[in-house]
Image 1: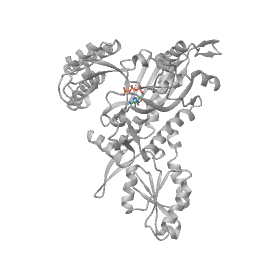
Image 2: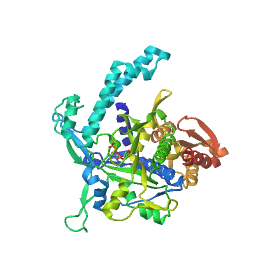
Image 3: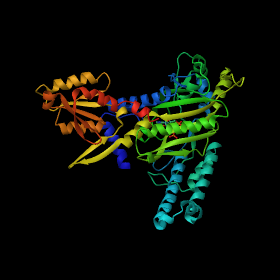
Image 4: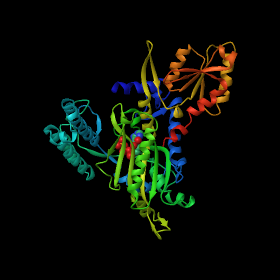
Amino acid sequence: MEDLFKKLISHSKEYGFIFQSSEIYDGLSAVYDYGQYGAALKNNIRDYWWKAMTQLNEEVVGIDSAIFMHPMVWKASGHVDAFNDPLIDNKDSKKRYRADVLIEEHIEKMQQKINKEVEKARKRFGDAFDEKQFCETNPRVLKYSEKIKDVTEKMVDYLDNNKLDDLKILIEEEGIVCPISGSRNWTDVRQFNLMFDTKLGSLAEGSNTIYLRPETAQGIFVNYLNVQKTGRMKLPFGIAQTGKAFRNEIVARQFIFRMREFEQMEMQYFVKPGTEKEWFELWRERRMNWHNSFGFDANKFRWHKHDKLAHYANAAYDIEFEFPFGFKELEGIHSRTDFDLKQHQEFSGKKLQFFDLEAGESYVPYVVETSIGLDRTFLMILTAAYCEETVGNEERVVLKIPAPIAPIKAAIMPLVKKDGLPEIAREIINELKFDLTCQYDEKDSIGRRYRRQDAIGTPFCITVDHQTIEDKTVTIRYRDSMEQERIPIEKVSKIVREKADIRNLLKKL
Ligand code: ATP
């Protein structure tokens, strides 16, 4: 899997998807630029999310709030006081870690040991195997399960109550070692605020520190009333937005999985208090459907229920994806109660309520949130789409990106650079380009051109050859099956448009 991760990173660079930021100056840590195909793919993913949210749901509307916000926003939201990660350094390797992540990885290792025991027993007992009974009685499994429970409870308690000394003792007691140095020579655990600050010129002296937003959600909360009133929205209704967020991450070593500047796609769904659990379940289902609509292996996605609920949440689940470095969070679905609106109401002194005509009363709505990283979704798609295949005695690398979000939809290729074939290819592009992103490619052998298009995930290659001059037909080659078909030129646009239509994904939701 580590090998796959390295391949994804070098493929992304070689084929113009992702570059290290400021590379000619040796790069900036955990900041990345999207290249020509990366930007196109990212736009397509965002567009699909946006349509799934705002176009398919009449009651969900989209906004675009500013990155800079009044400093009080982050006081009210709790980010100034509590948007911290507990960090710990290994004195030998000089590497820095998040203390909670070290412990979670230790728990995951114990879980894997349990899984191994279960698999061994399943093989031994065959059809008669009862997994539940085995887990409840096998002494080794019981020992690990109890340990997991104990360590998890301690971790949650120490994190919740800011017991940093105890967190360090837990790491030591559990014998957790630094993956680089292998030593247990740890510093104390310290809290580190993840928000970037900067100065805004026009504010009065002393109060001119503002923050780069660490999430897009607060821009939605502070606009709740604006949207509700101007859109004459009734509960339940949602506000969606996509945009940049910034976090000074302590550990940022996983390519675009954890960046210091990244993009989020968030939706806050405002509901009547007491109904939030129902909506929470509905949005969980809807979001998992969205992920499954790409058609990748469903086993690569799983639910993770939060053991440690944030103080304002009454339910929280993550959708995890099996990245090359293991199952990790891709999206969070949270039932956030009325915490945020109430906080902003208190700090701003403005009422942020909803007048419920039927009930004849005003109240602060509850909120169900779906929050996903666009860059992590990009990495998910790259991971799931990347395939190495042997064709004859050649290897091909192909990105099996679903056609509706592929960066380039069709490549148009004259078989040779003469005999009027390039002109016909250009004519075809001139027709297609109003609906689809196309690429003209006449260089190298046709086989090499196919490989190039496979590597960037182009689902359709249209080849113009000498028969085209005679009977106005071309070949269309399908990326995944590599099958080729002869079709009339006049049908190219219809076929490609139909197969690459975003409706194909939206209709699955
Ligand atoms: P993690 O535990 O991985 O730090 P989080 O729980 O802090 O993530 P949220 O605050 O719930 O993340 O943010 C919502 C989503 O934003 C995440 O599910 C993830 O997809 C994305 N995200 C968060 N931090 C980053 C980051 N540093 N780089 C890229 N995407 C991120």
